[in-house]
Amino acid sequence: SVGFLLVFLSAALVAADQDYEGYRIYDVIPSNAEQAKLLHQLSLQGFDFIGESRLLGHPSRVIVSPEQLEKFEQFVEGEKITNSLVNSNLGASIAEEFAQLQMQRLLAPITGKGRLSTERYYTHEEIINYIDDLAERFPSRVYVRTVGWSYHKRVLKTITVTNGDGRSGKKVIFLDGGFHAREWISPAAVLYVIDQLVEQFEENAHLLKDYDWVILPMVNPDGYEHTQTGTLARMWRKTRQPYKSGTTTCYGADPNRNFDFHWNEEGASSNPCADTYAGPTAFSEPETIVVRDLMHSLSDRGVMYLTIHSYGNYLLYPWGWTSDLPENWEDLDAVASTGAEAIKSATGTEYTYGSSTRVLYIAAGASDDYGYYAGFNISITMELPGAGSIGFNPPVTRIDEFVTETWIGIRAMAEKLIEMY
Ligand code: ARG
Ligand code: ZN
Image 1 (cartoon, protein in one colour):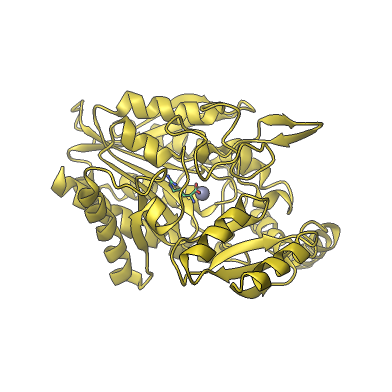
Image 2 (cartoon, rainbow, N blue to C red):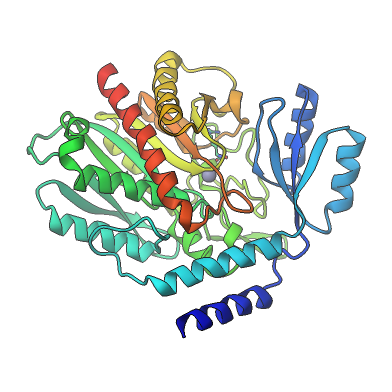
């Protein structure tokens, strides 16, 4: 029976994969500025911080390999940093979740036509098929355009959603997802926004009256596809272009450290093997060039840039390269707080909002800073809530809850924007 096959498959997947075996996850809580700084330094020394906070009293989450364990324990004991073990064998957790996802795919194979359900995650190919299909079904309101190719020559396409009145030169909201490969809920949330704008047009017509929405649902398809190839790959963050580091080859740059605005300054790494590698030069990645060129081509009409990541429940605005605030920070704060409040009153989920550097950490070369610098008055990184053993892996049973909640926030921010600009 299918049930038997699935149980068998899942057991085989769990048993076969020893990746992340013995890795642990800790929450560490900085209680003063000095401790926060020390933790940030640790993140630049090869410790993988999967959720990092600048806020005192808020936990940062870090993956600790068996080899790093001794150093880590000495560090937290020596510096008296509050910590707790949240997962004692990451390998087992990821393998189990991965098997579940594979099963879901077997049970519900689709090719990406018609309305997509929120019952599972989709491949890059399915996402492309889906937007192509939408353009065919709604030719007067939806346009799909090829905007470039990834390093491995996967196609990057934008979908522009309009109200079909034929008026050109409208203001623009530019939305993207899938910057970081492992943040699967990001493209899922962006697909839901597309669905609502297109299929629930009557309800959302006010969002399209004076604005076109230009949406790039998948910035980093090479990374995203890589995360679906195995459990170690599941935690991949960067792009996939190979880089030599001495005699070894490491892959990818952090697309969100690769933009040419204070490129490779604080919070970015020059080490090709690091998760926050800025790349050998700014815009070394074909994927970030695509985003850059889109931003410039839209900048005279572009009012809001919104980029979807996970996780941490943040609405972040510039600057991320300095703790200074941009000139119109009150507008940025008004839009972000509107999103946070709409979500809080709808579902109770709390978002922290503020400048990236002030509420999260300093990180230069990111797309939000670049978008703001390129002319988008409102530029926001939305970090969705975490779930699953590590935070990047909400189980498929929770996709619907996450994407509908995200839409509530995005819609509220767009409404605020329309009122303000
Ligand atoms: N988690 C995101 C990252 O590390 C946050 C980026 C926020 N923006 C910024 N300019 N630092 O890429
Ligand atoms: Zn991210």
